[in-house]
Length: 318
Image (tube, rainbow, N blue to C red; front, side, top):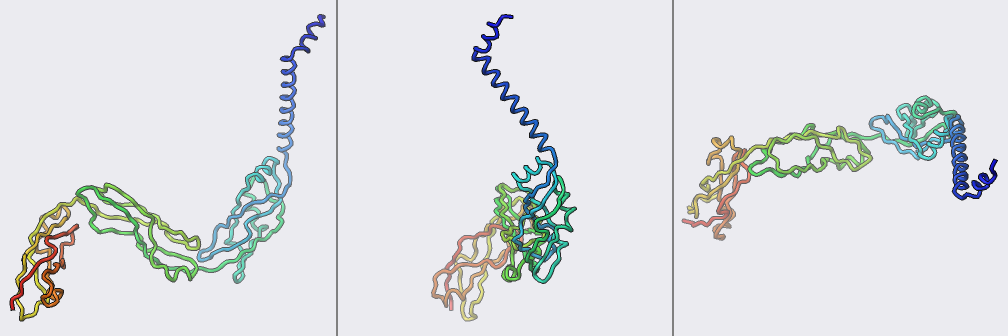
């Protein structure tokens, strides 16, 4: 045997580094196998779980400082480590609690099976097997819904103002002092641009108060949208509140009125559907030289009504 080969391999720095690297790899692999074997076994340990109350009875509001369950569980070491690194939230059924005056008591032992179903493993015991909470009863009230919209219609289109909200009122439950002054609930802002079709959308109710419960939390909003056309009418002005002893001459006696309305109603809208009046009372017995004319009648289909001139002059004949 040539001993020089052996001596050369020992004196070779590269070979020495590879042996050291292999040694550490062996150590790491051994440690991993040991850890897997160790953590795969079941252990009993104290673990903290966050609490979420569920199945709260209607018209009941819960106030509790008990937000943690401390329980001894039996499960694998991996699972215990996971629960401690990332605490799990457990649901606690409040509907089966004992209610006494304004105090409530939840027996965790009676809910053990319900809690076991939420974890990997099972509960052995609890540090505190009861959770205590305060509660108060709520009042209920019907509140009107206001649709909060920001609509922009396409050129030549407009709303028919026949909007419908279903339901138009919602049930709100909460502390009495919160409901006394609450008469309207707004929806979240709904924005739409370039609208040219009928609107039918589901809108959420805006509720920024955690003590108020709104049912339902959404409503249906519908509104008809049609293509509009524009037409000009010459409307005579009617004089009102004129004393019998006075005669009056208007300048002008007619004004041009422009109105938009749905294209399909173009044959239905007539001059007779509009009425403009000159009210003698606002002249202060003839002291003002010109007064505005007022629109007192218009077609139900009309939109964007305007007329010129807005004010007119007059001559009194006694």
